[in-house]
Image 1: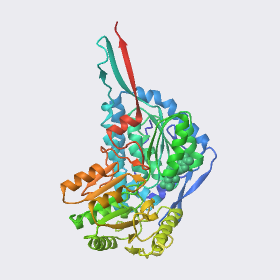
Image 2 (image 1 turned 30 degrees about the vertical axis):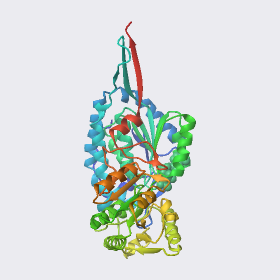
Image 3 (image 1 turned 135 degrees about the horizontal axis):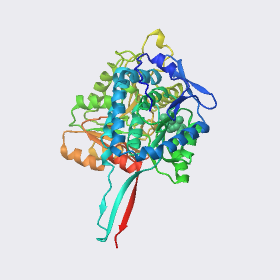
Image 4 (image 1 turned 45 degrees about the horizontal axis):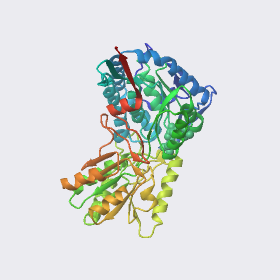
Length: 499
Ligand code: ADP
């Protein structure tokens, strides 16, 4: 544990330079062994704001071995003491919310007011939540035989590999590292190549309280840095959030090693709007559910909005006017509602989907809001949000995860049809239904194939609520007590024979 107290630095450009080219291994900031790094670009301007260590398997090995060395002492600490340390980390992070919000806005292009600052505060919240759950790492006594004392005990797995994406990097990392650490595991995080700096800063702040080696982070590319982390023999569990394709690769390696994995993958989340729905509320739910403020870059984005034909036109017109009123601009500007897409590659992918949708006969692309006109943002990766009407559920745009500000509004004429459309998807992450009828709502919550179903609201993942998908959306649950117990501990059965 270091005595140095980090002061918040709310100049994200300076902070990005300070953190450039570094990993955090065994309690110390360190360059990659190869000395190589790669640029970190502000997607709002196209300018390089710093760089990140290009780590390879040697860096991963160093981090995994540091984590393995630190693990026995960390696990031997009384659980509540570990929890108290994580809660202290949460308090430290609370002082850095503004700083972290600005830094993540700089590297991801997510607007500070509507997204990035909120993400930073959720990180502190997640740590506080799990810090308080340490004494829930309980076992049971089992009525096996009156002459024997039979019990179960929760034990940490060992070293956990954490692989995260760029869309909500700090929050997704926090929801993995907090339960892993509280349960007595040590951790090696592999950050996303597009957003390596804010998560490094979070780990640096946490390392002020944690013993060296307990929490390590390396940056680098998937095949060079992520794959060796999954494969490293010291790593006994991997928790991954990202694409279905990479999730399969991770699961394959974990399968060879026979280690457990948690996978949070994609989504194509349906939102059913019945003809008795409160339309203004449903529209507000579509705006937040589709994460227009994050350019739709969310696994749970309400990207298939199924609307009853009687309210379809009213819904579409209201939705369009709501999104039109949102301001696109510099992510660091308090007036901005919507920032940028993360990278040129992602922008091209989104534009490709929009073009494909336009080419479908009968489809109409309703472009919303306005591109910013500031000269400084000329090279920014902005794209106007698009509401598609006239596409059906067989369209690529309704079947594949776009990860951009593109939603399809699909018309239906009765409830059974809506339900069939909602479930006709490879994914099953989240779903919502909007209706005044309790009977319809209850039926839908039972029959919708998704890990997270909401009625008349569309809130994001919350500490305390199990979160995860069915079908191609993943394996396992996160964010809850159950997630910590089931995914970051082994249960050992112990028998004392007193005869
Ligand atoms: P996205 O399309 O959102 O970037 P990915 O699934 O490609 O999603 O990336 C999510 C995370 O997985 C990133 O940190 C990325 O570097 C990492 N990753 C990519 N390829 C691999 C791999 N072969 N093994 C392990 N991690 C990988």
